[in-house]
Image 1 (tube, rainbow, N blue to C red):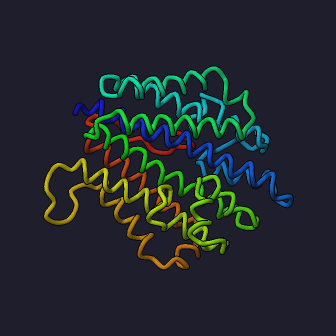
Image 2 (cartoon, helix red, strand yellow):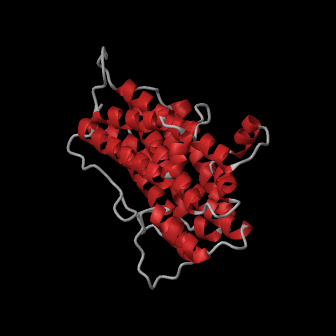
Length: 310
């Protein structure tokens, strides 16, 4: 497969997952502001912007409207949903010969809806739902209409690396808001995990069990361990050589170390300094992305977070 096509498919996966997860993170923020009367709105905004790596001038008002502009509506803000959708559509255009017609139409429909201002016109909860539903449609269309060959594995690799990175950011956001009694429950709902969590723990709610579920559950698809495991599998599928021992790529090593650290470290040790643990996951995802770029996308510059941009 041409490195240009492989890179485009990888970034389709990343951009779409980033758009969905940014909408989930914004929903956590909105629900905390609504449900917790003692929360400090300005401190929450500062915490969210820090989690997303955005450096905002002191004179910019710390309001929900500012957050929505920077992380949702503004296509010129590199960390926004609108910018992610633009990136996904451009990547799909570059790989048009590999992307199925149905998938291209789904991405283009999403792009046109965002470009026409639907995100800004809808109420926030409706906008967040629209983003999630559109990404789900595109992901399902890709799964059902693309051959599950190398190109599909690059798509999955991008999606799972981004999911692990953004889930770590959502957990960091919950840790920042730990003084709120609603922080972990709203994070579970934003991750689509509340129902699965309640079924597994049978109503025995606690912050510790919520953190354990989002960090370590091997069966829930949006947990950190599950996302990292899927990324490892995608890399294994792309490694055509037979492995008798060890791993042949730095991306596999970075992801494997991060997963092993989560699975084998005592939960209390992780929770003792959760923001630092999540920062290590983000660094591992960045290292895996850079290593994948060097190995598979010849001549491509590795994209990393720089003040909210990639």
